[in-house]
Length: 382
Image 1 (cartoon, rainbow, N blue to C red):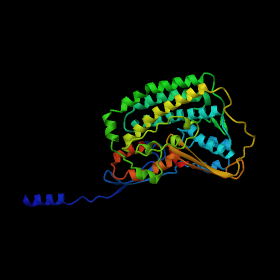
Image 2: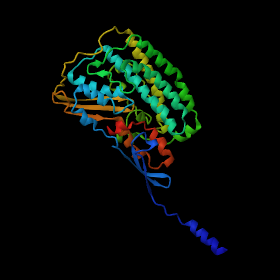
Image 3: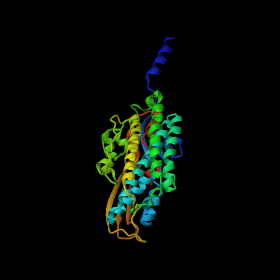
Image 4: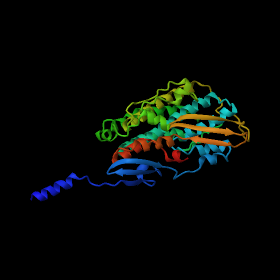
């Protein structure tokens, strides 16, 4: 009896031999927002290393830009972040207008600012609905899509598109808005603002949501700076940067842009920043609508030559897209197509930082962290 007990005690005293397991999440997996692949090294249920592998839907957008004229590029640029189509268009036209030294009509400047903020709300609402869904809560998605449909209706009315608006043009906008549209847009903004607490109340005090997000996936300021992370993810870690305030473009210099920040840098903070930014964007949209009511009727674009050639030179136009900093580096040799048009997309940098964030966390927390990074795969792969 005594010998048997000693044998059992000896077996317990030895540590079990473990072996690291390499696990592929994706590229075809429902928790990865599309064709993103994560190669995880696991020690038991804990992640010891993570490598994001991108490129599964690479379209070669930058090379396609170089063989198309400046009108055609807008259509292509529209698509890399399909939730932020209007914002994507803006970067291209701002770069070209700067090279041409072109002045855009005041009415078009304020209209662009308004539509950029409505597009921002649409993008944020998608993530505010889909993130809780990834953690098992389906109801917020329906509320978020109700608000999206309210705003989609006014965006669709002016552009004819639900996702790819194609409403920007070099020199302004495609056309003026229909009669009575400003009033309908104001009502849509008011409706979304009034019903936004429905989403907030569903999630804010939910103990499961809090348990899955508070203190999980903490991203520190130093890592953000090293990887060039931007947008709501950076601001949730206390990085107080927003191009709308810091390097104003369009009409942002005349607007009180409130920058939302948090200090914890965890999944919950990232969600909070996104929710608060929706309120800020709705306020900015109201300010733009009020200014548009005061402006006299006038042109919303400039007449362009049949063949648009950009003078020789280069410029970099960056904008505060819904997911972070979006930049276009345009190099022209005086032809109707760019010699080089380099795209700096927000999602690419934001997803690279996963290699620093995931190690040390449990596999179960991986989905919570991944969902809180708010990326679009087309914006990573371009």
